[in-house]
Image (cartoon, rainbow, N blue to C red; front, side, top):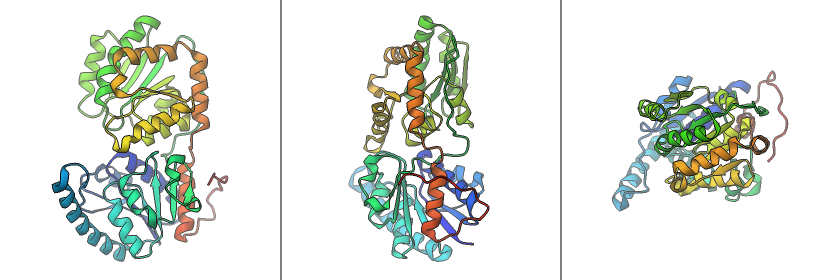
Length: 372
């Protein structure tokens, strides 16, 4: 059985799209999938629970921390390159998919030297460091934004969107009169700014418009303090959880979403189709979350509020306006849905199989041609 390597990780924005592609690959072909990551990344905890083999490379960041960190990072990277080369020789993959993150670079470069077909998956509107370094060696670039596509020759680009796990299907939004349902997503680790500022903002909205039903994902170890903040504000129709397993179901139930603007979160919201208020993480690499949010806001599908401006008054103002304007909320949801890519994982998987020379199972269902 032929093998495909999925290299990289670190954060959910790298790991979850890779897992979505892996699931789609196994749905349509007989193929062995091996992930390659680092011991410090989220993949170390998540990937094995999904039943995939995870190979680990010792890699460290080279950016930040001045010359000392850069020198140490370069030394560790050279060691990782040797590890990656041995891994390529042992597994003899038919293709490599770089999803970005620290481990992606050494594996992709080692694979390129061994003439293994390389594909890049870049969910964000800004090309990440690892993918930027290996871009010249890539035969494919799977992207979600035109800003990212310009870094590659046109014949390499496939604008398929961000691969998502199963369950993120378009859902036509309808208004339930007198009901206001809000979903708060701070990413898999939560977001301190949203945890601190959303509860008092909702108290203002509830005082002006009436009861708001809230589901709030806080991140681990923060649920108790956030639940206390809602209770002190006198809000009772609130569910506070560290992590939401079925994000798709919660987005589909919501009238409005408040969230960070990571590529996966934006893709999940648009795949289903909901209005959102996006507060991008201000320290994201190359400010890519702000670019993601502004791109969606320019379409009329979201409101982007920079974190420095997102105090409880501003958040309450935006939420009150959207909860009080059904037509606007419906229009934003429709626009978001029109720009979603719920089948991205399958399209990436099929194209990657072709690049690897792996035949799709005859029983696999056909798919409509995606934009390229």
